[in-house]
Image (cartoon, rainbow, N blue to C red; front, side, top):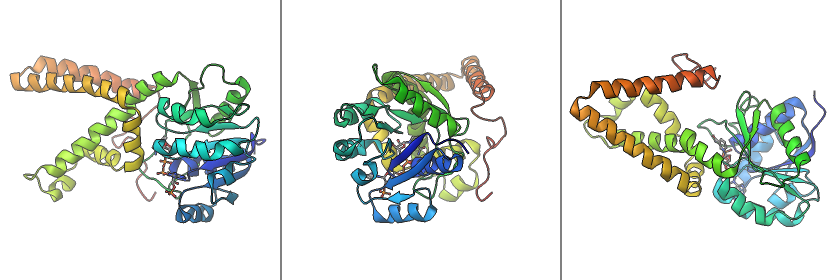
Length: 307
Ligand code: NAP
């Protein structure tokens, strides 16, 4: 067991990320007390039953009062309203952080509500699954995954170091970057790929010449992975695209240009172009495996459901 890093951590929003943080903090003894709040009574009751919170609160302010760390774990579109609700009760010297997948928009809506003397250190764990809710979390979700912190210039370094220590103790590799750069990096590595997966699954659903049962029966790894990604939480992803609009549109523009180039190569029978393109992309995949971000196993090393 570690010495607790925080006395009282408030988790606002009790879904996949919050429940995983709760389990990870409990497993390693990183917080003396974990207070929780979610919008609905059903989620609050489920979280209490699962057992990753020590106290449950009907309001966000009730959970955040007296906390030395408040973690906003709600969809990006709800961050501003939560910040407005907790701002008046935040204790001097406390840290507010969030786990939102977009950083510039979260900083714009949350920062104005954080009072002087309270530290705001925005964050984003690059870890997740397609599942959501208080029963979906697990203590090892963040292990060997990156957590990006985007503290604005002038943020108290002691507060940043303490939050870095928490993420490291939950198993993450922590890196700091500028919020704008974060949003561009994530538009390339996560947001646009999700949009493509949503689109491809939508196309398969629309294709009347291929029956639903054929899509399911013959879904090889590529399409199967698309369906897994496209099963991600609709509210979360709606908010991601609406709040990371500029970076996503920039990458999507580049994507459609490349797609048209490949479409033309297929139409023209330009084998060398296709071969050279796929050789380049194969090298990127090798780089990801070498960096330890995935495995070369045919099923990507994923544990089968139920095991
Ligand atoms: P989730 O499982 O869908 O849970 C969201 C939680 O937020 C629920 O407990 C929900 O409560 C609560 N909530 C929503 N609006 C609220 C409000 N106005 N007041 C209080 N609680 C509210 O979500 P998640 O996957 O953990 O995602 C949470 C955040 O983490 C998002 O910002 C997302 O961008 C980010 N993130 C997600 C992933 C991922 O892969 N899932 C990865 C990294 C970061 P009710 O159930 O009561 O409605």
